[in-house]
Image (cartoon, rainbow, N blue to C red; front, side, top):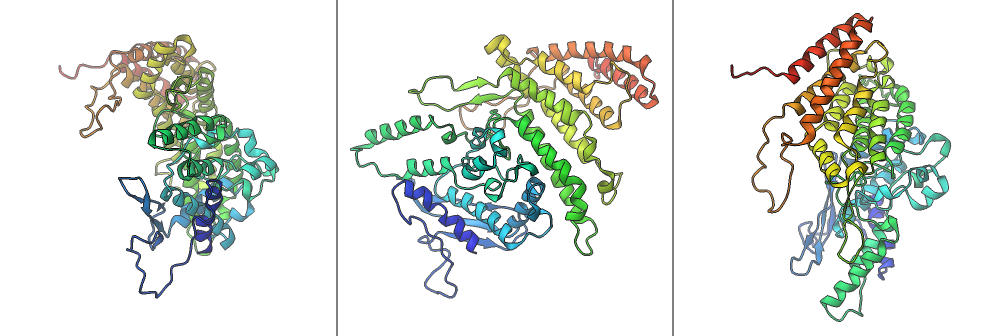
Length: 511
């Protein structure tokens, strides 16, 4: 209870900047007081649910005539504690010894509850998610003990930045540099939304004042609002950290490599039949896959910087070509080259039946299919048309991806089972680009004027470039087969050669 209340009261620092003292106060519900009801609109409450749902939510009820927030009922499911436990264990146990067990001490769990409480209260105050906030923190600052403990790893608690997984053990960063907290953006947003402006004589004057404040705020990058993360902007993503996904993920992987071999000890509980280990290993692989997704979003990325007409510059820009190339190179190195460190037999043999799906293969397949998806390649063609040689093209992507996925061809090296599976996915994905399925109609009921991609690349450069890449790959595989000495690898290359022939010359199923 005291940690939930602390999460509420933490917002007073923001309201003081806006000119209000003790503007928000959290109190315990007076049990037994029959004059009060949870259904009474005069009271805003955090309502506890004895549920295994791992979540919490923070809505508000506003007067549609004025926008005034009238009341809020935050929903707090019991198992949000398991959610924050798993996040913190996988993201921070390499640097925080308190996180190396299945049940956290009250002080640590209380701190994690406090952060979630503050986030949900932020919603009730009218703040939206700001998924771009964390992108304004340079990655190396996340390892700077003095800086990150003073400023926090993200400028907004309304971001899904969770915990500082970039920090390394040798950085000696304490809890203030690991947890989210109300930051510079949150304080500014409350000041912008709640401060009284007596100099405004009417609505138009008030609008001008507010617009000027918004424009002036952009002089400080930490006050940037990056939106909900539902566009193609790699700067606005959920669960990510820092201004460079490749650098941040590299540091994160270093920590996962430290955590994984210790999981059997850290997950141990009396009479547990490795359920804990199974679940935390899955969480670790999910975290790894999430970071791979952060990197992938750079490819075909479109940066969206919302502006009013008074502000200079464009709203839309392509993610820099060098950044996109770095992203593909990172995937080639960290994911498509089999990350054998994830295949720790001392861990897997405790719970993973060899007859079940490999979690690593699922991550590899999903990311490769996403990387080569029609929608991503379509964005690359449009950006190439708009920005010319400065843009990362479809041919650039397929050339860079092929170099990584098929790196064994020039050397005749054996191809391991994960790579063989991945190469088959590559052929399938390019075959689908050469022979695209008919576009699907957009679903009914979409807002008027909303533009969505329907999957139609038939008359773009995408099939042409994909066909050229398959033809080139066919020649390389043909030349590689005689050099391959590993029997299964040779069988594999003979098989994918036939698959390429079929993709280039599909059978007419109507005959």
